[in-house]
Length: 288
Image (cartoon, rainbow, N blue to C red):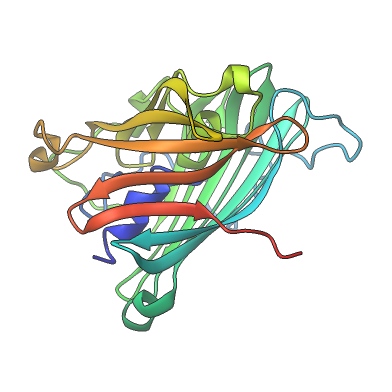
């Protein structure tokens, strides 16, 4: 159960999917050769000389098309508290920066401790997010994995993985994934706080370093005091053949949004059925 949980939840909430967003129920084996790597000797997190490295946002820049996020989501699987997602994202008129942490919690963490930390930064162009840099650190009892992706003009230019990905028969070429974004930017593009008129009605394609998938949000509808959007997670390429069969290639879920005092709608709940029961990510009420 716990090996599936991170991918199930992160692929349907505001943050990313486990192990770089491989998708719901995806195998957790290492993926294809990462292609071009960062220059030798460049330490982790150092983007000096890297294209599209993003400086800190200007402190007085005014938000444009997106609202900021600072929130914790509690994750339940089959009614059992299983983990938490901590999300922080800042937008100004020109740039965005986001971080996310997913970790097992509660009784699940007693038997299986795992966590994923991710960061993304890039440019804001009107209502579009153009990725610049993405990093992810995944840790579980069996392995650790670090991945960095650098973008040039919105397309993936370099990717580095430690340890290196192992080749697979179903692998896809990382440098041939034009039109995709990184996992964290992809979920921000799909689920970031926006005015009501811009909720849902969108499709975002993501490449996580190994696999390509899409997040599709349908037309929004009123549901009690919230706006609800039906959605689909859709595998596209880079998965084991058995995971591309009709009944396993897609996963429907639903997302609920509510407005804040600023009139911006933010995710308060994500829910979908899994083989292990209903998975729910629910906004944790803030104290005070």
